[in-house]
Image (cartoon, rainbow, N blue to C red):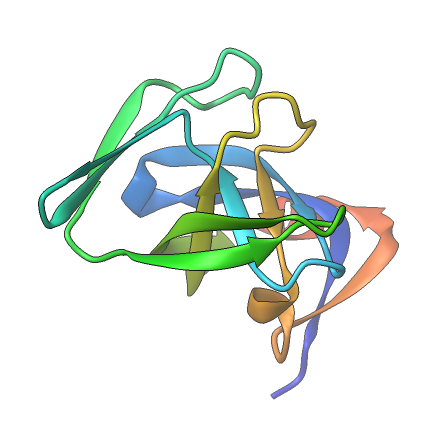
Length: 139
């Protein structure tokens, strides 16, 4: 399988999360991918997530309930470990739907609401840091 070339940033859709035209940044230094989530409520065997932001465009007040979720340890670039919720959903690049694991984190203070890590990128994409929004432009 040949790998597609992708830029350092892109604009993608997460249809199951009702999030469209979302700015993402490829982060080859991160193993996992993460998405901004403003509120997380573990309610018995379900996880209620509110994807809302006053900072990031196209993040409305979307609430999604997950019946399947996990917890995982994520080590940040400054060396601190954080235990986060992890969900599995769909993401669309180049008009094709892929499965992606996303950890949930508050990213209102960050420029990009979503980071795409190596776990997702490997065997699918090569990152060319000179390019921007390649997948979005070839929809």
